[in-house]
Image (tube, rainbow, N blue to C red; front, side, top):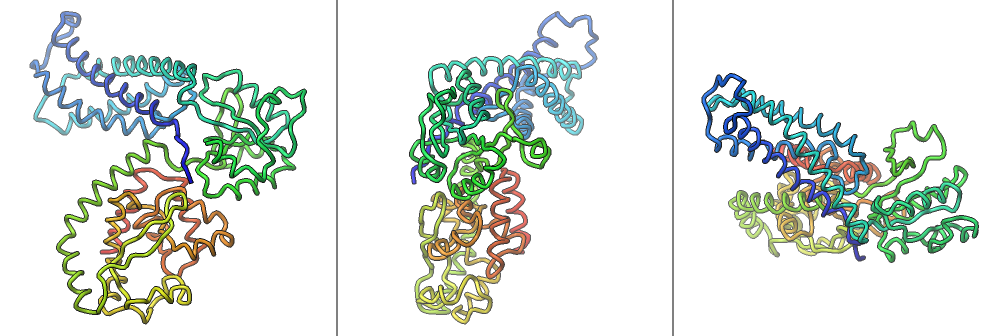
Length: 467
């Protein structure tokens, strides 16, 4: 299954670069105004003139912290659709929080005396410079959209007045960054409707295949209240498809629920299904996987050698057990584990079931490896190769995937991210022969709420459980 190119990398990357430049300029400008010009001579110089190097080195520590703070408030989204006035307000709040971090660090680091006036100048100049950077970025973004670049392919589901309103709002405002490819409905819309000029993509039962064929990134749902069973069926049929779904609410009660409401050009949408992670999220997760899988393999090499020797001495057969598993986007890969059972035991997997306790096929060393989860260590190789991640839903065999996809709701949605060595379900006790339905609930929760810090939390809980 080919994956569409998601136009969510360039704009966030430029935003990060602009913020780094703006903050560094603010550090240098604040120092220059205070110590290198006569503009502030009316203020008493109560401190010795520090070296510029100290402020530069300090900025190298502070900038990453500020970027994390900004990212925590969704300041690096691909299309934030935020008015400049709202952006300015957010910048003031976040820079103020960042300055509190700077002052706290200066309080505990007494080896160097930082100027309080420089801190005040840094607060003001950071707000101005970051806002100017965002203004320039907005102009760049609009220029790209005018040239037809970085646009998200979107479709409309429905042919009512609400759907027509979505069309007129987005079609007349291409600078919002969306390209309307067409619409789905039971029948082609009436000629009197403005959205009639859009391409008719077919009925709702053909949506999943068309989403992949047309390389769609966003589905805008505009179904009437009495058509909501169709929506349920549509979302169910699109399990495993990495496309964002947003719905226009038709009842006030719906808007007061716990779902996320997103406004696009005055039209409120309810996000009923989101893309698990952006390109930046995938890059940060992949970088983390490569660095820490390499580090774990290096540090655990003595233990790996001991396990290899123990396996060879305890039973005949290969050291590793390699099995076909289903991963990201339903693609198959060869998962590596230390062999914990007698040779040929996998022939009886279907009869034995999933992860039964006290399996008689286990070897003596295999019982210890399974109890301590040390048999999973070679999967770090899969992580390093990019076939798995350190954290994610556990990979399953193709036979069981075929069984569960029609029996367990949202089962295929777990393939929207890379499978992992450990996961949210596992650290909460759902492993082995536990309820598959409960495991899926935890897997889906992880996918819909993924963050870098969520991965760290799961890894720490895993280490604690192993110990």
